[in-house]
Image (cartoon, rainbow, N blue to C red):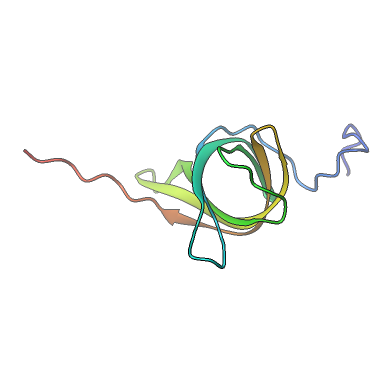
Length: 115
């Protein structure tokens, strides 16, 4: 059954969830000058991410983002979501990215400092 409460002007194909996590991104250029930055996710779905950006990210730009995931593998191994896609909208320091492929990776843990 289709959610009839959803506005007809809302074209989203997937529900968005308000998740605030640190995001690191890299613009995928054919040149060697990769633009990198950081921000915070504002909301996410299975098909897209809305996040704050310190750079102007024009629609059509391809990027890779890495987000530390709140869940852990086997309750002990940190995970990060790594997604690739393209920017579909940018306004007022916020970028909307369409996810084209993604994977979960184990996140590197900081080694203990021994004195």
